[in-house]
Image 1 (cartoon, rainbow, N blue to C red):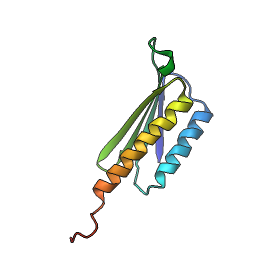
Image 2: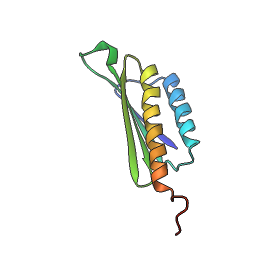
Image 3: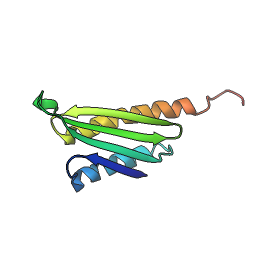
Image 4: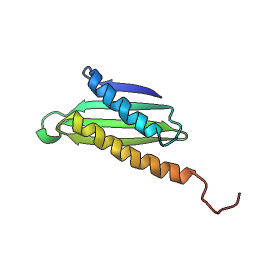
Length: 104
């Protein structure tokens, strides 16, 4: 799967490895992802405990799944966003699979 990184600052290999690991775990759900977009953002002012914002978009057949999280560090925000997107993927997969016991 192709991963597109979007940020106003350079993203180090630690974050790229962490994202790659999370995406590989999502691949275990056997869903055909075409690409993913990840966004690193720094919020100005406001609450210093949630000034880091991480967003992830996963492109699945016929839809785009989106998740966003805020935290005081990207190390905390990345797993939160991927946890949310994992739930969405499971829900999407359940809605697209044929129901058991129904005839086609």
